[in-house]
Length: 544
Ligand code: F6P
Image 1 (cartoon, protein in one colour):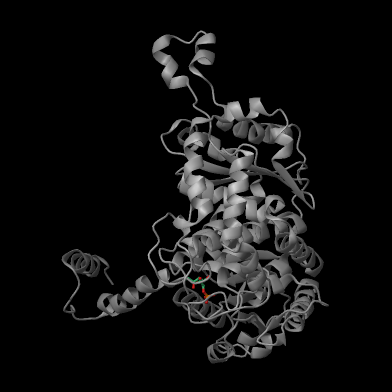
Image 2 (tube, helix red, strand yellow):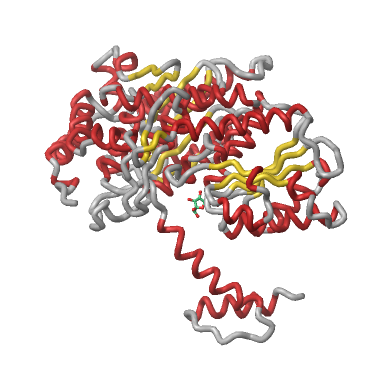
């Protein structure tokens, strides 16, 4: 596959010429020059409002970025994704998370087969199961109803379910207890289950491959924990374990009846799977109707992304602004700052979505890139972050792009809280953009020696995403916005956003080290001197 190198594209070169002038212009000037900037540089998709006016862009910047998207054939790549082409070339797979939320009557072909009916068959099976569990009809081995649900999974089989559970907690069935176990550190399992009655506990083992070390280790510990409490009767497993996977053979090998398996497919990437059967815990928590509302939200953003022109296309614009901030203004990181406590796990979820997708150093054709890819995502809910790391964003030497996320209506009205929260998110974006000049600081009577310390340079870029209320549908739109922005960036950077070879080496080395830690006799170690010493020290200190 040969294509023009990204940095040789006319739009890229034009952006490189354009950036020198852009660097000189402060957001203060840009707003002063155009009193309607805040209205113009904003989009509304079905109630999700995206204000990108506080980015260091002019109309010309946007024009060139859109031209870059055209030159990189973003339109064609979107069509290829939605059309079921095998765009994940290194794994030779189609990338079709959009099918997971396609309406029943849609047709989307993979190798000539319409896969929409399969998706809806699994959704129907999940619905029937969720209704039985939520209604108390599904009984555990001793005849007691299920009151506790523990999802065991890691990465995409954990972060989406945890994030969605927290984000939609308001809509959850409060008579059920939900826990999430991911880490191979036994503490995770022990703390998650210490107060649960095994006879009332259902485990969902969520793993696309059903071979992941952490998940299988936790699943075996869960099996032992259950059987210890239920007199070792292996028949109990059928009532207390269900699986979500693409690998029926491995599920059966573990001892879970494949009748109790909820299927998904290799064309759903792990980090794009929270709206597949991997969302079973979400459906159990919020109910099938709310789950379908979540899917409808995803679908609305899918359709927008697929059809809207790039200058009015929210995920495409978000992606292009990210490219501008990273490759031209030098911002290496994006702080995700949800002003909603329910979104406390959203930054962690986005870390996998964005960094496992776009943390790549070679192009689709395998050539080393000569430009930055994959922004670093991190964050915390506001206002907590304001009392922690915002100092660096306001006055540090690095440029940090920020995504503020907020909702006009709170789900928990409590005196003045929500107006205070909203005042803060609006103020932070304003402060980052406009800052405070030395003259303004002086005018407040600040002694000269203190002036430099109290100056805020401003000109810090941010997006603000505002919706009326955090509903399942709005959450779906928000997640799909980031999913598609990640893909669009991957297209610009000409990388495979859907593989994850970088996780392999550590896994292989760990498997090699396990026997060196557990062998009775001191093994002959063939690592480097640092690794050898760490192993020896661990063996000497571990006791038992
Ligand atoms: O280690 C990376 C990874 O493959 C992720 O991409 C994935 O989400 C996670 O592991 C879990 O994989 P699985 O669902 O197969 O257990």
